[in-house]
Image (cartoon, rainbow, N blue to C red; front, side):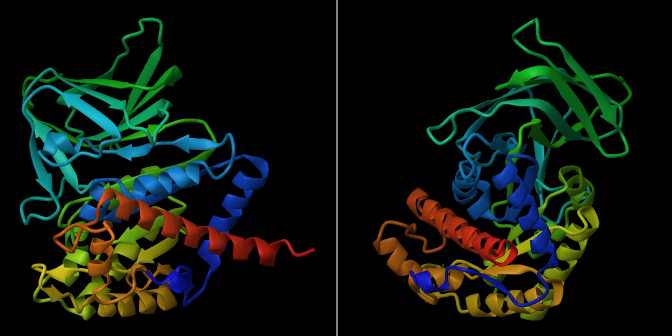
Length: 382
């Protein structure tokens, strides 16, 4: 590891970051406001270990100010690995689509996955677990789903005294559910409302609250590249629902493992992702994290890591993005072999152990706090 490189790089205009840091000021100094962060990537993100550590550190930054869980997707309904920290239980048969396939991906948004059923009724329960979380409570939920009016989304509670109100916003693509008190478990039922329509598609769920603090929305798809995320036709529409103050992109490891990797194509793809992001949330700060070091088939160092970093530095200069040089912080080319020796990376020399992802989360948190410290020192001079 090279701790000397553990800092955010700003090669261009910092206006968006100043705006983000001003919101952090309000939270730190007054205990007010909500900060939404959306993080996109591949398998490093889907397991929600790297992002979990970041979420945990941010939500404990200001005593008594926590925020909430934000966006979730029931990956196990798509026959894939679900983050340990929340536990979806469901009934019915569900088919899935993910953004790594070339099939019809029009019905994909910020999750990069969707699940569809023809069964009715079906149920979904989501609860929290794990030593990291003391339990997330929410009093408002947005369920993003298809709008054919063929199925109704119904929320319920095991406590009959809970009052629940809900309405469907067809234009924005979700059903919003509001509770008269805070809840720690989500119960949903999907029921066919029109016998002429047979399909219901779920895109994802946001768990919201009125509490100040950080909401860290992690969105990962195993194997996803920049091309994969550009297939998500609902991305801009759904990201606008969250209105992120900061968007973190950790997309590139799968691009770099493509034998036909092209730095020019990669740069164009990222420019389009940035454009779609700013359409959804104008003025959002954007952070690009360079690739983690990796090997190809455990034998050959992936030499595209440096090219990915160069692309991100050019994007930083052009669009005012921040860059966290994950590749450099790890120690550069072949460093993942040393991380494996230390128990921080897996034997495939691509993925990390929980300790490794925790370390990445802690390192990025430190870099984010150092950048915020620079803002405070420049803004509040005596």
